Picture 1: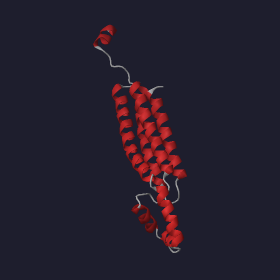
Picture 2 (picture 1 turned 60 degrees about the vertical axis):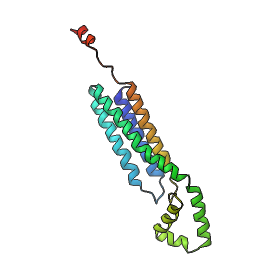
Picture 3 (picture 1 turned 180 degrees about the vertical axis):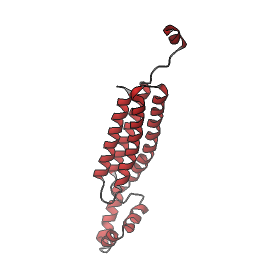
Picture 4 (picture 1 turned 90 degrees about the horizontal axis):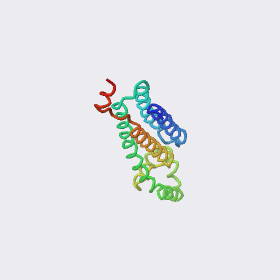
Length: 169
C-alpha cells in the first residue's frame, strides 16, 4: 500500500470510530465531541495523504508518522482515564439504584437537576452514565492511529546514497 492509501484508510476508520461513538452515545453524553475530534484527526490525515499523493518525500512521510504518534498519545490518555473510571461504574450504578429505591424523591429531583446525579457518581469516582461506547471508540481510534504510524514508518522511502547519484550521472 502506498502512504496516501494508508492515510486515507486511516481517516475513514477514524471517522467511523467517531460516528460509532456519536450514534451509540446516550442522551446525556456530548455527541458533538465524538464527531469533532475524529473529524480533525481525519482532516489532518487527508492533508498528509494529499501532500504524499504526487510525490512521496521522506520528510512528509516522517511528518505523517509523527502526527500518527501524536494522535495515538493524545487519544490513548483519555481512553485510559475513561477505562479506569468505568471500573467503578457498575458499583456506582448499583448504589444509585439502591439510593433511589430508598428515597423516592431522589430520582425526580435528579432528572430535573442532573447535578445531583453527577455529584452522586463523582463522589464514588465514576462517570454518571455508562461510557463503554466511548471507551471502545477511543481505543479503536488509538489503534488505528498507532497502526497507521507503524505502517507508514516501514514504508518510508530509502534515503539515497552518494553512490546512487554518481551512478545516475
